[in-house]
Length: 377
Image (tube, rainbow, N blue to C red; front, side):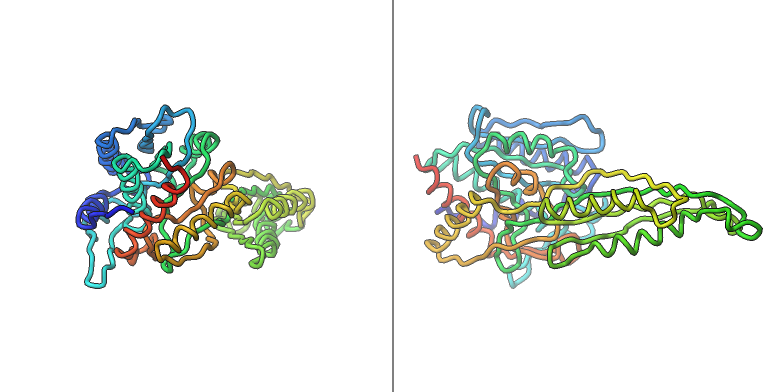
């Protein structure tokens, strides 16, 4: 058990929330990188900034306490937020009399990143555990972690367990299931014709797109966690007297398991072969997204150990599912992974985003005590 200096923690969190770290705003994320890099070096950790070459994003901050060949545990959080430049000045972090802290990124997930630091600090100073750990703070999670996913996966492959410090649920639950995402772009090639004198010679790409929207919506299956969002569409030449020969539709799907992903993909492939209008050709492009996160048998064992540790501390919590993805999706493909290890909060991505200050210390101590038990000196 460690005692967290909450006044210092909140002072540091307020500084982090004073930085604009919205997606694509590299200067703000660089400043957050510098904050953590200095803190980790002061602990005696090996620290580096891992950069994939993209000019749009700041590099990841990676720190570890061993030679880096293998790890017992990896900790993951992200420093980017969804808020535009200027938000930090407009809404500085505050803490009210009820112990609720509000501010841009306070929940998602600057407090989670800071909690990782305090766990690492305790592990290095208390020396009551032999755990070999690696910390990854990335800068592109809010846009799908496309620039950090390969590195996160590479560390997961040589680690035993992963804890992702996305915000804890408002009731204290941790997350062990997250939906995956997959994106499709569909291009409809019809036949242009005069809509007045020869409409029968045309093949309307916009009409075809409309049929597809309705058909794709039917793939939604809330009970299985399948959600379809026909998000962006366009078509036509701009002239009202021409049968439109081209249209385009972008669709996102969310799902939990591989079987659902295959169902979605097979349905789209079959429809491409059999369009509603046989005179229209359809191109399909699949891209990006995340694999779904589902608990393995080893994850369930880790959950049991967490519950046992929590009981010793007088803590009660559960495990739940989330409709959104996180870096836990990637890590869970290789090792037992628990997500939402940060302080309890709610309303991420909104002006009402908050954390409960009284959840900071117990959730830090839960992971610390768990590791103490799992990897004793």
